[in-house]
Image 1 (cartoon, rainbow, N blue to C red):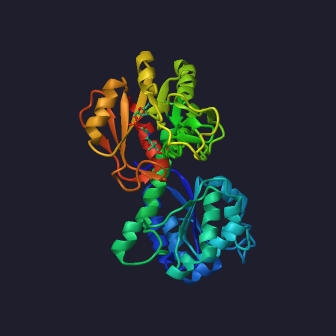
Image 2: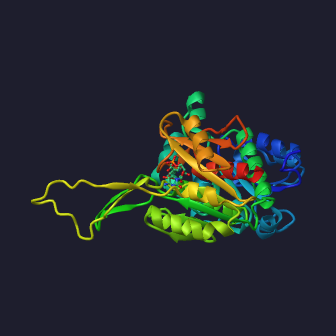
Image 3: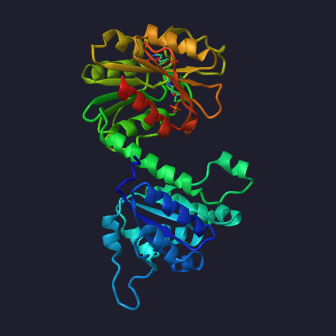
Length: 406
Ligand code: PMT
């Protein structure tokens, strides 16, 4: 049974060639058991007739503020309260601009401005309009308001030999909504609700002198994506983070800032006893300078210094040794080669319950990118779960989904 059964959907249709595809989208929603109210802009009526749409939805189509012959008023506020989702497909450059800037001169944009439900926008226009800086800025504005912009995947565009601006196919839009509501159900029923989750993130910084240090390229993006997702699932989240520019988007996430591996270890040992789940995502420097200089090391008149390094403690292994029954400890493995064997080895040595392997050999994976590609190894299970390249926000959801099954 579709998760969209019984959902109330406002389907906004604007005046573009792709408007004919809205009929197929409407049919998919209705077949899944959703109730659909169509709202059209006046120019959309030039592309598809309201009669077709009202026959498919079983409801009169709304396109004006009131019905001319009866004077019946259509309340955009009531529509907003009724709806569980608003989908605007196709969304022309003009409607996108109006939505981005609050130009409420028709029923569709007025309904959008009153909407409290999630809004999904499927742009449709020609290549040049789509590439214009004003369209791109307006789409960014919509995203910044929390709206979902649904576009065909890059690979799909290439295989269809058509350019950007083509509307995502009705099946793709339908699937996007199904996945959105499936995720929402999963989040509402998450076993992480009320649980304490500790996450380490970012790099550690090991001082050479007051101005120089040893570190790595970690940005904290992966760790904060997991923190935001865990908070969304109702967990009480603490991130012990090395120096990063990135911050969590969710204000409920508590961040404990540290600089070095030794400071990170201290903070983790304080937090871990009260935690139900700990995820070690930080890229901890394996070595620190044995005796950092207290004043800046001078270049002039000096030989290059020889730095003596000592090993940092292994934070994950320390927590692994202190783990109580019932606590879940998850590690990451960042590899360049021999990934699976190294990941399994780390699981054993550090007493982890699960290891998330990412490899610098994969384009778009690992440090600093907004995407990642992971394989997940679980204790006692031979076969890893292998995931494709995805935004780190989605990778975070995949990782937490697996943690929820442990
Ligand atoms: O921050 P981003 O730019 O988004 O990049 C994300 C990431 C690539 C840093 C992340 O996905 C990741 O792979 N983190 C772990 C990096 C790492 O140090 O891997 P490792 O294979 O060296 O370490 C194995 C595990 O032991 C990790 O869980 C690590 O946190 C932990 N460890 C390592 C050394 C140490 N001294 N203490 C530790 O706790």
